[in-house]
Image (cartoon, rainbow, N blue to C red; front, side, top):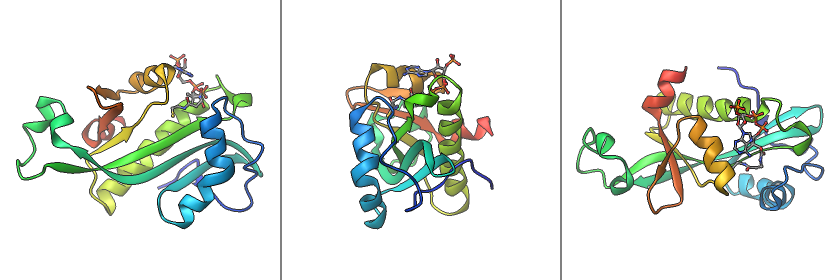
Length: 165
Ligand SMILES: CC(C)(COP(=O)(O)OP(=O)(O)OC[C@H]1O[C@@H](n2cnc3c(N)ncnc32)[C@H](O)[C@@H]1OP(=O)(O)O)[C@@H](O)C(=O)NCCC(=O)NCCS
C-alpha cells in the first residue's frame, strides 16, 4: 500500500503552513503534534522537503445508527446503536497550492488509508467529516459525501469508497 503522505514529524515546517482558514492553520501550528502524542489523532502530511503542502487527520469515532440513511440502516444488525467509523477531522492544502488538484489527491489519500485500515486491521463502516463551512460542504459533496440531517456531519460509506479503488 503506498500513500502520498507521511506521518507528521519534527522535520516538517509547520509554522509556515497557511490554508486560508485560521482554525486549520492554528491546529497544525500548535496542537497537531500534541494530539498525535496523546493518540487523539493521526496526522498525515503532503510535503516537498520540509515544506508542508497539505495535511489531514484521522481518528476513530462512532456514528449513531439513527442518523444514517434508511437504505444503509436496513442492512445493519439492529443491535448496533453506534457504528464504528473513521473521523477525517481536518483536511487542508496550503493556499499557495490551491486549485492545482492537490486537495483531491489529499482527500483520495485519506479515503484510501482509511479504507485499507478498515479491511486489514480495524473495522470501520464509513468516514465522517464536520465540514468547516458551506465551501467545504460543496467540496465533500463532489466526492460523494452525504450530509446527515441536523448533525453538522457528512458521511461516505466504506462500501462506496470500495467502488472508487
Ligand atoms: C478545500 C481545499 C482542500 C481544496 O483544495 P484544492 O487543492 O484547492 O482543490 P483541488 O484543486 O484539488 O480541487 C478539487 C475540486 O474541488 C473543488 N474545490 C476546490 N476548493 C473548493 C472549495 N473551497 N469549495 C468548494 N469546492 C472546492 C474544485 O473546484 C475542484 O473541482 P473541479 O475539478 O470540479 O473544478 C482547499 O481549498 C483548502 O485547504 N481550503 C481550506 C481548508 C478547508 O476548507 N478544508 C476543508 C474542510 S475541513
